Image (cartoon, rainbow, N blue to C red; front, side):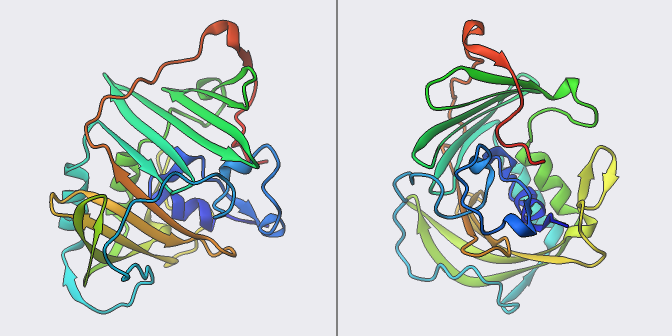
Length: 268
């Protein structure tokens, strides 16, 4: 039976941009040297981007359940309202750039799996991926039944908003990429999250199944860092958000370097 909890947890973070996918119970401990390695939550898959400096040792990401209660809907609304049309995300092992060009969502991910560079570009429904310096593999989600355009982290956060059970201000602070940020413990009912395609609830989640996160909010009200555990071994995920409003150059590869295929991050 497949464990979809990692995928559900990732959806809350808008981490589909990283290609974070569901892992099966019997493959949780497998080495990710296969072609879908860029789609795991393991902390040892890809060469890390230089870590951002922090000023405190209070980076414990476990939700304590204590602290001052905060209005959950207002908390999520403020985060969503502060999301610009472009920003970057990094989990310390890869980097993804996100932007909205007109009405088209574009993303570009770069990472290293088993020492081999991995790249993924999404433009609307089209995904271009490659390992190493070979040709790009093109996959068009519009041609696959029940699938759609590239994941939008803002939409993901909107689905989280309706499912947040509680938000508590922990009192912990830390300097993240030069900005002072405060930690909030957030508990989400995965079964109440919008599942996309007109559905309600995260696939695989049972009624009342909660997940705990730590949202770090900087002085501007923006999400600076998000932390959670997927439930797998060595699976603490820390994601930082930065380069707010920066204009990225994200375009499809030249047509002579593209061949039809399936995305490396797909899970069978």
